[in-house]
Image: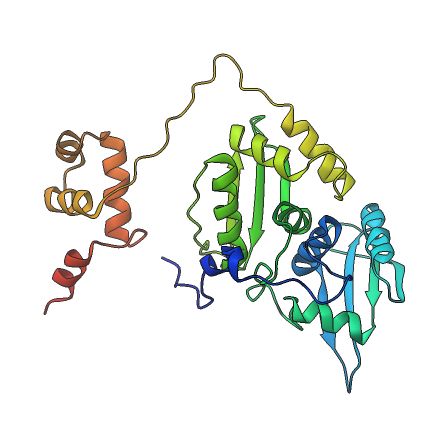
Length: 299
């Protein structure tokens, strides 16, 4: 099982009672455009410092997405530049990209104060601690580090890949309020990141909520979201009932019996479900109940 993340989850960030208003019009996160822009910058921007007071904010994107950088430039009342670049990558002999660069110290200070760290930031970013437009902020994060579209089986989905516990927890918290779908985040063992996925009706509802008419967004993501919003469940597709959570008392009984077939009868669960749960408990993918851990730790 992956080690517990050292960054604290962010439930306290969701309490708007303690939030205050930003000090300037630039990056007023109650403005939907700035909330979106800030979410995008947290996920895909890089704030670097230089000698003295020098430094720079940069965002590099595929050339097809240049329009969103032009919009960021329009929203920013400081001098900035957009430059093109062509280079070879592992995926293409010629990759065309565009980079937006902002050097103004005042702008960088504002961004840093509201939650855009200098340097490596993937695990350190958190939802803003000032009042902000939640759907627009999340759409910015998703446009930068998420996906929306259809699986190979033709099912609609919306997903986020993030290294930040706070951002991942916030998406789960917010999406549950909008769709009722509950997700438990856990880092994958291969690259230590969170992959949070919503499918079918949950994806449709969340895409419709976040990508509302007239919102600022990447055009290709907006088009994908519009396609997802139009999905309807085929008449013959069965609706899977919500999962039933395992209680510590059930885990204890399952471990004591050690037999998925017997446990299925005792717990009114399926044998396959008991078999998978038993395997997860024995391999450490699921934490043992407290008294079982104490038993195993005894000399």
